[in-house]
Length: 450
View (spheres, one colour):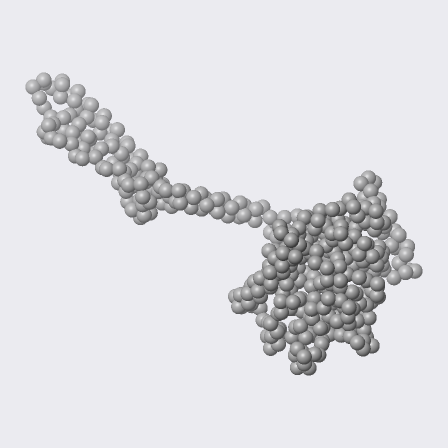
């Protein structure tokens, strides 16, 4: 073969744009099949086997060198073929330029693969008889807000002492009642009103949790009940923001009822112990005390009845807006988010209904009847015999400008949240094919912005 013949042109580098996976596999195979330029191999083989005037020795030397080159080429060819067979088709070869989107996608896929492998490994380590990672009987699934009397001492001895005292008292006295919980957002400007409110709830029957939306905590230390209260501070946050984050149902599962009240409530005519006696007797899962007629009232059903019934409870209202045929909120099965009281079971449901980003709770009162076990026309009610006065003092605002401007901004957001909550409800109800609306025949009236 003529040595002066021009070599074949070298392959041009591939463009920097992403390459389809099927094309990548084909080019990958060709590269590994020819690890060295074919034209170079062809020329050297031709010169090695040619005969010239220098004689046999020179020809043998050239043949030996050519044989070595052939052997090296064959070894490289075999290595390339093996690498091609074992190459992972899910990723392109390193020599192909890739853009950032492809690299991020590959990184995400690799992370997902590691997560799946880790999950499978964990499942293999778990015993076949159970699905939990901890031994049975060790995990405490619930908790409470009770405080320890001391950081020292022997907890095992204290537990045995409590068990012995309970066993000794068992024949003579009924088992102790479970406590309930009062949770209130507070600001230091309403200190006196809050003091009168909390003082109405006896320590033997109620735990107390205060949400300090102004960050002021130490200023409450001059009240006797402050030491037994749990104080949580986060500036500028609302009652439902606190409730969603700090009243998780497993944390408050030790309490029979959860009171989630505003701070601007006068309780001169209210007794919480008698209130819960009525609630238990009437089987109310979601309730509220009636509002004194001097209160700021938004819905007629929350107003104290002029002629209270014998049982001290009303569950529906009849007025120009609601007649006897109305069986939906706010005519029936409705309480306001101002002073609601939830049973343990009802709060577990209502807590899930509270949205993380909808911090004012508007719209919840129209749906809270879904969380009352049983028929909401029976298990949701307003207690007339124990009533409160709602002062209607706005406590959240700010954000610059005058106080009134801040309150207008808060109210505007509250209205938007109600519309958004209703849309989310409609979407969730339409998408969940396993859920049946028990009150589909009784659609709630359009919520008002009041």
